[in-house]
Image 1: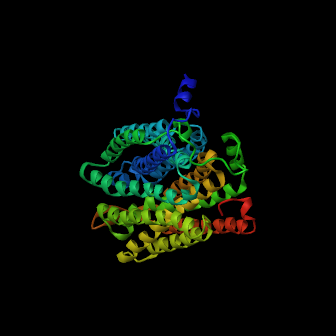
Image 2 (image 1 turned 120 degrees about the horizontal axis):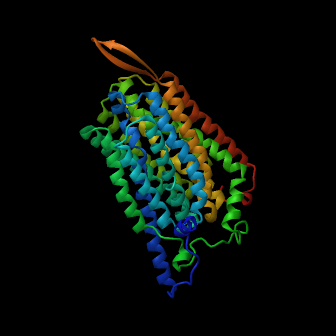
Image 3 (image 1 turned 180 degrees about the vertical axis):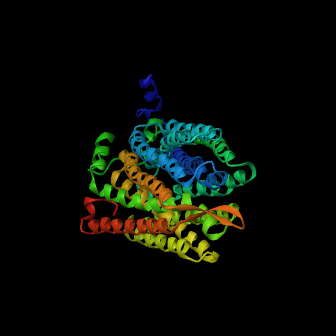
Length: 454
């Protein structure tokens, strides 16, 4: 039975090339390439809808007394820890998988888990189901990048990766607006149900848009192995090489700290805006949508700028985006409660910067090192670092946010203190840029031929 399951998801072998002339073959490759780009971008955006449903429903669950912040922190961390290890395992599997089957299956199971959460009660049921959701969510990013690495020419990978990364922003925008509207109108349980229904449609869309590797489709390879370091090496050997490369681990640590800041805003900023700055749920979600929308341009620009103006060298662009992220966080979390322009500007800066850093630290730099045969493994290694960081953030943040009961006009009200956790969030962003600086300084002293792409 296990062998049949593995064979179902396994990439097809290289088959006899189709009897097409060069022009027709190039046209078919181009058509499939654009379907893969569009499918992975929109499809992975729907993965995010099924992942961020918990973020939108936190405040209604707290108001109802269903869970407290500590319980929500533990539940939230379960998805990140499962996602971290799942991304590592599924990243390595993705290099050997038929992405047309592998990625839609992950989204379908994530959809069913969201539907189940909409009808669930009990703390441990939420921990288990939300943790399982993390594992199947990990069948999204690494398979998508593995597919793109096989269909997109290497010299354009930074630009395409930037476009692919707007999937984060598409998913976040849909969650912070559409899911919030559903929750506001029908209650928090419908936040999970609506996300689940959207993910079912997304899995069908993905299946019809994606393709197996070009060679398995009878087409010529888009990225032939011409580099002596990669030529004639199996995918397994390439994966071992990237796994044992300490530079990839250094990028992973920097990404982990960046993810602390990213998910601090993703998962707690709506609550912060409501409790500390007096926003209503829909108002807070609307301000958060600025972060998601502006992040689209940050993602697109990061890959394109580094490809076009820096010959695919990522260093200066990464450090610029990191400084912008730190500045945006300071504006949002340290400005006065009635300084609404600072909230909007800060979230805009943070969104633009984080969009770019998700491209650069979140995968592209490691994929540059790995090559097409181990692109999924590279994403898996970065992913396990990133989401352990995100999971630790959720747990620590839930513990650092202090709540107390006070009487206001004779009515008992819960007050949340964010002072300690804000220091933690900003410090993580600063430390991330410190590690990134060390990484790029090491590359400054290496010959370009030793580490292509920098």
